[in-house]
Image (tube, rainbow, N blue to C red; front, side, top):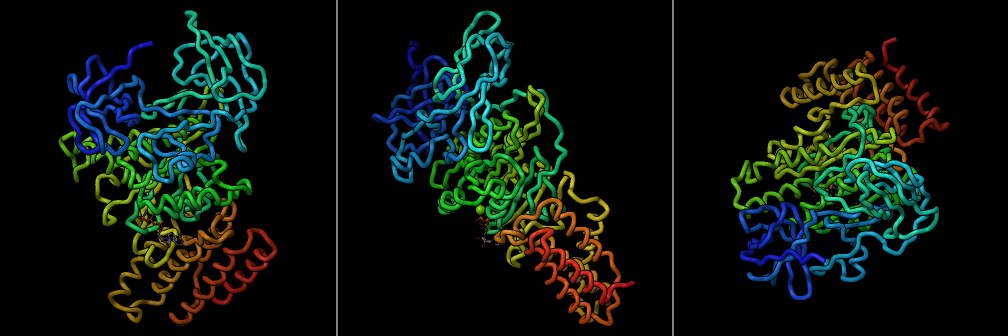
Length: 577
Ligand SMILES: Nc1ncnc2c1ncn2[C@@H]1O[C@H](COP(=O)(O)OP(=O)(O)OP(=O)(O)O)[C@@H](O)[C@H]1O
Ligand SMILES: [Mg+2]
């Protein structure tokens, strides 16, 4: 066996250690700082001559100069295989529930656990036969995992074409049992199990091609799907000030978006928030299956009390998991809350490395790291022709809600949709608090452009009238202008706002949105004969309530149909013939 490549600590600065080594080390290689009988995981982040700077994923308390560091010659990697769904991991893929059993909720230093169940048996069915040719990422077999088929692939880093020399028969096997032997053209042999390790900072690209995302990802949130849509395989961000509703919105999307797999990356806002996620999320009902949402989810979470470096790792772990399930022809949705914490981790390490800082102390390469992350999203055509996707939604929490800051700006350059959360809307309890005038999307809406433009025009004009009224008062405003304002308020209350916590209103499918939106735009287009503003106001108050009631009725139910009839009669009271 090769001797372990070792080094000695020559400097410690917070979570960064400087290590002198004898032979050679590689950038992003994993190493362990030895502290008594424990080993603390680190990653090489810079090499200068025979010194390497390493970020330690744990508190460095107790480490001393001259302590030994062992290099592993492996990049920071995670394990991919059946059993990932339902799991809660930290950024280094330690299973949190298992760790909690052993060590209490907060992790004991230097304690790492295998991420996947080593003993569980999976019902394996081979897909290939002896003699078949295989390339990187081709399926060798499959096991059922939850409601999905989990495909077991050849290693994603396989070079060239290999032949199947041996494939195990259908049966129940543990993840580390050998299921196949493959041979390269030059006779090299590889044993394959149901798990493989993959370096998190390198994208998995065993597919034919990336395709431009076209299809709208139905989130069942009206303001998103209709006004600021997200595409399957696209990217979006939800920046918002403290308390504006970022986390609630992400939960809502995770619950109602029409996707296969949900990956939640909670990068540590407040410690309490993560505990809330762990307590609540696993029990959220999955409207898709009637079971619990966790059965098709994976949660990666770190709290602010964990060292920053672990937070840096968590977004990479999360995206790698999303890419892994994409390889199976599934649609995965990755929601990261909040990427600002990730950026802060980068800032902290960059400071320790004494790099020349960019804007607000963030590293000058912040933009390219953010870009690399969002570029890992995408719709792809796999080797076998089927499609898979990764959609990324990142929350950003800029200090003071200032969207001009570097993280928000770097994110905005990359994403296909910007759903900006507004403090004013949150304070007015207009949820989801996505700003209807400032947000944008490059993706395709579920409604036609003409109707959308009509609705946008009313929102813009209504806002203008409202601002004018703030100056000249209602008396100084014409009835026509006032009606425009009432129409924009009507659109806002009955369509843009949605009650997340209501079973029916909380999730509005595509057909329902198209139906209701057509009705709403119809009303925005209508001319009315109002004698005065009071009459107009009274009418819209009543109409609004009728629509809100309608929103709470099951789509196409008898009540729903009947109520639509009442709305029609109501409209006849004042509408032009
Ligand atoms: N859709 C919603 N419906 C009703 N209330 C909401 C909604 N979204 C947010 N809220 C209210 O606002 C509060 C803050 O929301 P949330 O925790 O999502 O904000 P945040 O932007 O994630 O905050 P932080 O910056 O602290 O992470 C919630 O506890 C809830 O009371
Ligand atoms: Mg939050």
